[in-house]
Amino acid sequence: MRTFLLFLLYHLVVTPAGLLARLVRDPLSRRADANATTYWIPSDRRHR
Image (cartoon, rainbow, N blue to C red; front, top):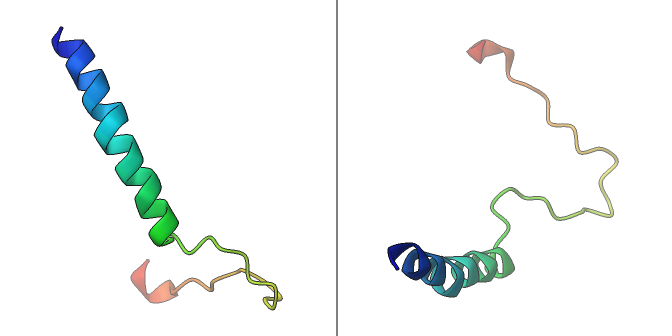
């Protein structure tokens, strides 16, 4: 019974919250930029 309740909690609360958060913002900045010539971000060699 506990497994079923956790399943319901996950699919009724956690999943919609995650989908809503992805609609509101893009935490990894994955949106395509039509004006970009490259998506390369130079590394900072000082922190190696």
